[in-house]
Image 1 (cartoon, rainbow, N blue to C red):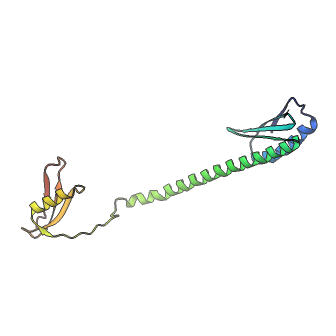
Image 2 (tube, one colour):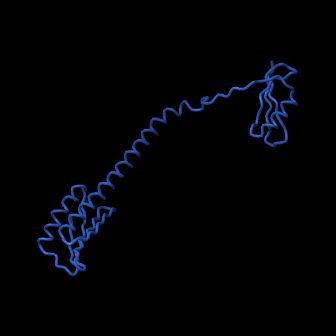
Length: 177
């Protein structure tokens, strides 16, 4: 842990430095890597201000507190920093957990790809015997449909009339036998 303690209009005594180092051990326990800490202490009017900035890898945590006692300011800053670090770690752990769940789901989905293109929806409707011209009119009524199934009155067999891509003409599907 690299600690730099500076005082503005206030001398950073050995007692303050030792106290800050001792308290910053609470922050160090959250990280395996080396952390850089910048502690700035100053006084304004009758308030003692402690600002602690912790840099770890690409993350930065910062707390500024002002009280009448400098040691109380440092304690408050440490509490704030611990809360920020715990929150960030929890968030990262949750993201990593969700990412691993998504990967597991993808792995589980891969065997399912072999069973692709199966019937997943079935629609039931009544088929009435009508002529081809009436079927064409029914298909025109249903603007969202591209085909219409019916029983041809002339043959008594199931037929399908469908719109061609030119949108002006129709196709008719009839069974051979």
